[in-house]
Image 1 (cartoon, rainbow over the protein chains, first blue to last red):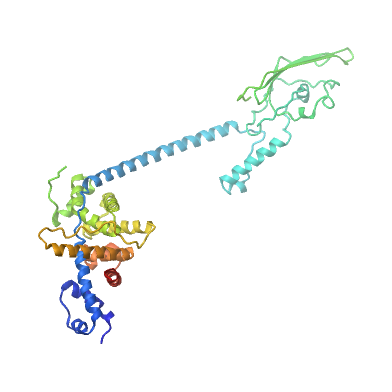
Image 2: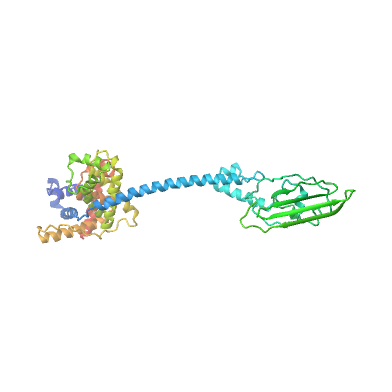
Length: 261
Length: 190
C-alpha cells in the first residue's frame, strides 16, 4: 500500500474538482484516515469559498480622504523642512556673526585640532575646560601703565570675562611713568588682587601734565560688569622732585545688571 | 465626480491607471471601487478585524495612489494592488505582539443567500467558522497563501508575483501551507 503522504496533493485535487483519480480511489478503498481527510478537505474548501462573502464598506470616500490627508501632510512636511532649513541657516549665520564679534585677540579660546576632529562634543568640552582654567588663573594685566591700575584699590568681583572678552585696551593718551611713591607702590597696602584685576577699558580724560615738578591726571575705567570707576590723581613735588602732596580720589558706580563694557 | 461611471473593462484599465496617475480622482475612485472590496476581504481574513481591515484597505490605496506612476502594466493591476495589501498585512502581523492567535473576532457572515437551503446555510456558516479558526492557527505567510489561492482564486503565477518569488517556489510553499492547513482544520473539527 502506498504511503498516505504521497496522496496529499491528490486529496486536495479531488476535493477541489470532486473527481477522484484511479490510484487515489484505490488507496481510499483501503485507507480510512484518507477518506476522512477527503471529506474534511471538501468541507474546508466549502468554508473557504464561504469566506468570499464579505460585506465590504465603500472605500472610495475614506481612501480619498486618506490620500488627500497624506498629500497635505507631505506638503506640510516639505514646508516645515524648508522653514527648518532656513531657520538653521539663519541661526548659523547669527552664531558666526556673534562669535566673530566677541572673539578676543588677547585670549582666544580655541580647541585643539586633534580635539576638533573628535567631533563637536569634544570640542565644546575642551572650550569649557579652557574657560574654567582661565577663570581660575590670574587674568593678564592690560597693556596700560601699572601705576594707573595700582592707583585704585578696587575690590574685584569675579566676572566671566574670558568667555566674553573685552575689546582691546584703548588708550587715548599715554602717561609718563611717575616715580614711585610710598602711597603709590602696590605691595603691603594694596592687595594682590589688584594685580589680578581683569582688563577693562581705560579712557583717560584730560591731557597729562608735566611729570616734574607736579603731575595730575584723571581716568575713567570701564569694568566688564558695568562698573565705571572715575579716578583722579595728582602729585605735587617740590623743587627737588620729592613728592609733597599726593591726592588720589576715585568713585565707583554700581554694577549694572546685564551691562557689559 | 463621475459616480455613475461604469467599472472599467480590460481594454480601458491601463488608460484608467494613467488617468488616475495623472491626478484624475474619478479614475482613481473607479479603481478603488473595483479592487477595494477584494483588498478589504483579504485584509479581513488575514487580520480578523474589520477596523484593521479598513485601515489596510485605506493604506493600500493611499500607497497605490502614490506609486501609481511606477505601475508598468506588466502584471494585472489587481495583482499589483494585492501585493501592496499582502505586504501591509504581513507587516501588520509582524508588528503585532501575537503571531498565531486565533482570529475569532470576525465570524464569517457567509452564505447569506436567501435562496439557499437554511440547513445548508447553517452548515456552511459553521464550516466557514472552522476554516477561519484553522486559518488563525496558521502562521501569517501560510495563511496568506491559502487565502490567495482558495478565497481569492489566484493562479500560481499571480501568487508568485505577489510574493515576489518564482512560480516553483510559490508552488512548494503553497503545498506546505495546504498540508498545515489541513492539519489545523482537522484539529479544529476534532
